[in-house]
Length: 156
Image 1 (cartoon, rainbow, N blue to C red):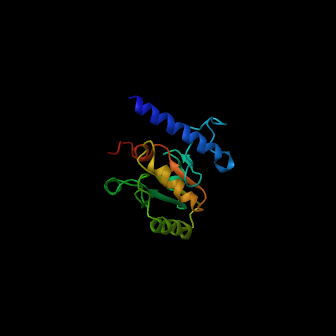
Image 2 (cartoon, one colour):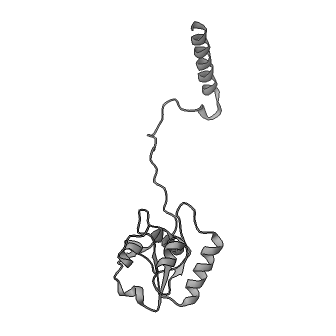
Image 3 (cartoon, rainbow, N blue to C red):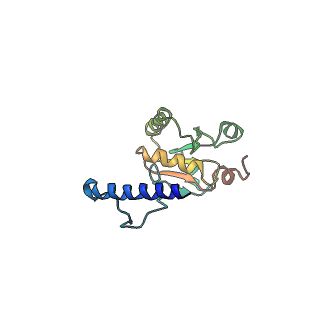
C-alpha cells in the first residue's frame, strides 16, 4: 500500500512539473469560468407556425398538404390531396426525397404548406415542417395535435 502511495505521489508531482513547463502556461488547475453542463441543442431547420385542425385554410386549393405519419396510418385515413412522406425525427428523410418534395411544393404554386403528423411529443409533422422550411419554403405550418385532432381519433 505504501508503494502505491509513493507511485501516485511521484506521478502527481511529475504531472505538475510537466504542466508548469508546457508552452502557454499549461492547463489551469482551477477553472477560470464555470463549466456549462447543459448546453441547448440548436433546432434544425426553419420556422413553422401551428395551425388548428379546424382551420379552413387546410381545404384551400393553394394549400400543399403533407402527411408525415407511417404508411399504414396514411393508408387508413388522410386528407384529400395530401402527399405522403413519412418522417421520424430519429431517422431523417433522405436528402434526395426531401429535395424532391421541396421541388414539388415550389412547382405546385401553393401559397402555404400544411404538415400533419402523429400529434405526439415530439410531433413528426412539426419536425418535417421545420426541415421543409429550412430548405427555403415559406409559409409552412403544422397542424396542432396532428392526425388525432384532424380525424377525431387517436392513431396507433
